[in-house]
Length: 122
Image (cartoon, rainbow, N blue to C red; front, side, top):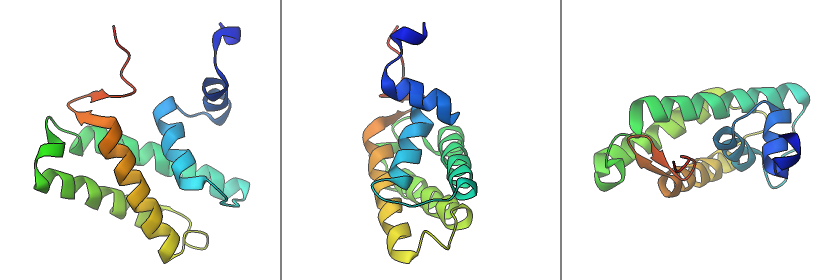
């Protein structure tokens, strides 16, 4: 089975993140964020928390069609990143850019009610 895993799947396993969480983590840390091990662990936790909260509370059916629902998703992203990311690394400008990038990713990748680019077609 390990031989059939692609490089991203292997990296996700080694990082202790799902494919979805790894995408959020990468958006928060790339292209050139220099994090210490403790900060990296904190950002992994943020990626998990953000995705869990959005999927549980915000990514409802047709969330992209209603302005109020889109605003609630954006607010959740901003709130979680603001209260959870290491502030010594994520200064205001970086924080604002990461909020925008994460929102765009969520908008493009999650259709609502459990549907996403990550859902396995069965």
